[in-house]
Amino acid sequence: MNLQDPTVRWGIGLTSGVLVAAIALLFLEGTMQLLVLGIAVFDAISTPQFLKQAVES
Image 1 (cartoon, one colour):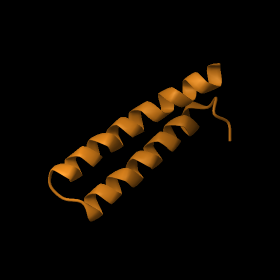
Image 2 (tube, one colour):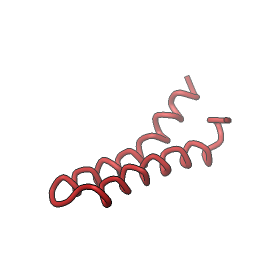
Image 3 (cartoon, rainbow, N blue to C red):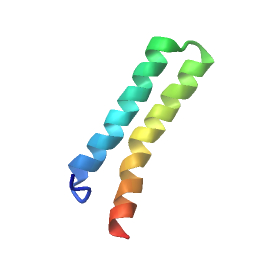
């Protein structure tokens, strides 16, 4: 797995975000669902950035 490729980094981030969002939609409701969906969005955006910094150092 080549973490220098942006497609791989964004694929990892989006995959984990989609999994967290699916759990929120299938098993949670109300405020907790919204909170976990927010965490999913944060995960999908921040994971590729963290992986990019890890590769550069």
